[in-house]
Image (cartoon, rainbow, N blue to C red; front, side, top):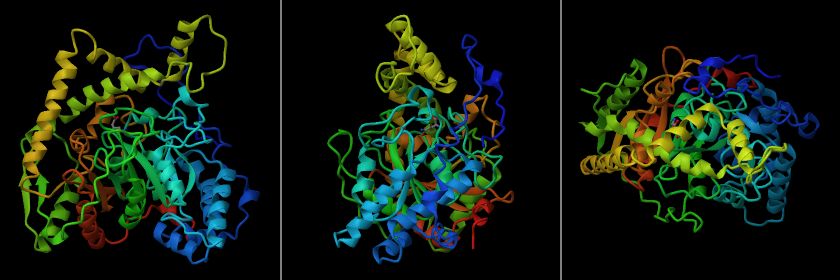
Length: 534
Ligand code: GLN
């Protein structure tokens, strides 16, 4: 049943003295994530084996007829049913739809028709990505009844590659946050320690992969929301180059920054999903078809490490050590690693706070109580309806950003804040251009801190955002960035490093990432996950 977690309601209200309404979080409808046991009746030995397979292995098992797509899907449904109570990774799982998709793919294979690159592999999808006939809430009350009539481009791509959409994962409301605690339907937890956050905003996607509730997952990343939760949950996560993946059907937060990104248990699986979602789509005019670049020989990649000297940023020891260990590893491998300075890096969070809020305030104007399923109830008139819908529908963090965004765009302040932030963003982009004239890959920690305790940062939006110190700057420059797990710290929590490359050079990240992956060995495994090991 629902977890007995009580929220500090006064803290949530801070900064909104006028906002009075019940802030008791509504917990997930406990039936929404729980498939009927009868549908899944399976030998549990089989499900134990399959959930530990890589996506690649599952696909192979499906192709050679070892397992049907239905069997594979049922294993993950059963695992979700058994384990997700403790985690809160999924908001919606429609087991019937899942099995219908699987049956269709099985029929295709049995008929001898060609099967796509994800044939038989289940994929969890963040709940701000539209899925046809499947609720898409953005973890917001304002969309709690929204059932899209269409699939996002990335979902279409997965379906046409014969992947199976497994369910919709938990997130911070409208992807605004770094811990998945700003979800209106209750937080998600970290499988390495259930008292801690999985990161965010794609926390549900990251936790589902780390806990083996799904072999693959999609997140979205505006300022770090794929990379930081991937780091917190000990799995790899990629934010592709801005424009690499179509945003059609993805609920817009900050359109000049938003990108969909893949998460998986290992880089090979991650790449499998990445290749399916990448590419131009005419419904997103910012998407482009740039050929996947041939990777450079990882041995010849020039690596730069971001120097933190003279900056005020507080980085916990394990995060710093992770980078130092990777540097040592690369150096023993005979590579020269250069320390690089990026003085404007420090201003990125301020730039991001202004620009992302400005874009969000404009993007969220579309939720007016008339479109996207309005809540029931009679209201006096149009204006009352609109005000009441937005007042009840948006959580405090979202409201805070709409207020901030409206302010920085308002007459008299636009030049002082929005325009200056745009100018500063351009300078930061030029700094990256200079940097990438002498290195090929830039190395930083992914997060300055380890996964923190639930509620620890909830009442302090700036502290929450400061965890994105390393992930935000590459986003502002539209650069691809990959977070790679590098083992556990002494407290048993995952540590990770971030690698950033020039535009369209994802392949270099994969190449260098693989070197690390091989050196580090298999990814760390939470205790949570071991419980079902045969
Ligand atoms: N944590 C950042 C924010 O709150 C980034 C979120 C994201 O990438 N979607 O805005």
